[in-house]
Image (cartoon, rainbow, N blue to C red; front, side):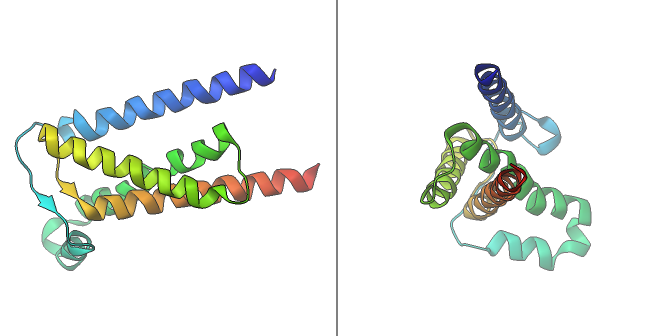
Length: 147
């Protein structure tokens, strides 16, 4: 039974990574048609631009960009401790791995000219990974109390 559970977690994680790759590199509805879209290395500048210009950019586009970057990484932050176990010192490691994975995605977007290479995306993705880890920790702690 335990092997089946681990296999199911791995399959779900692979499906998540493939869906993430599609959304970040191929989904035309998210402007992934190619072409140089820019680089932002100034923390919080794009977030600030989106929030201060929400009336011209539109609430939906702001939500997709800001909240979407957080939500997309919640499963990643949840999956890491679920697959590899949650130790006392691992929360920092898991959040760091979320950040590294996000940096890798941003660099790949830069190299492939799909989307904007944006430090704000890294910050938001890392926040999403942290949220995913916190959900895992909350559910795991609650599950231990029941036993």
